Image (tube, rainbow, N blue to C red; front, side, top):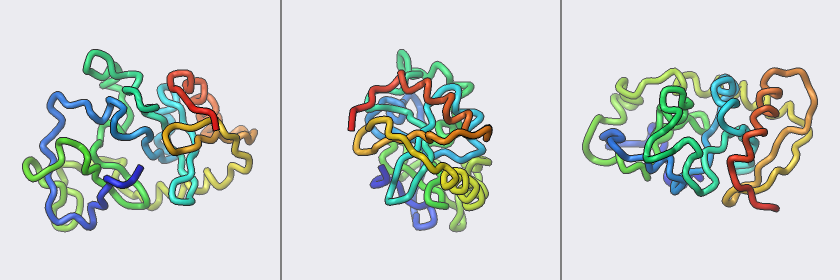
Length: 193
């Protein structure tokens, strides 16, 4: 999941030329999940299943984008929810992960021409987005929520990752959003354990 992600703090030269007509990020060939912060759940849970996975021995909350097939909202080469697409889709090829901002180097728009990705050792202002600020604080809040989930239930697999749902019962609004989002698992093909 992380082999083509580059920490922007360690980038010397990289540019992004834009998407044009490309939809490779949605066609199911590159990634299956997007990391999720607690504050992002409201915009995601009605359209994508929110699950838990273990990545590098650490629980992460993610939403499912693909099971290897195109995103269910990609039709006739275009996004049917484009105006309401999640922030993770809006800011691609950037993603907050591991308390930093990463660039997906497999994106065809990333290369040696276009807008510089970094300026003065930081993300270029051209790519500034609220989701890419205060990552450490957002991740800590999300980690507290994940840690509070005491009972995880296996759902199945996508690729090499086993997906889990919280089996806890609580009136926590974030837990309710997680549970409601699981109704959308029907859009994806999960493999048995």
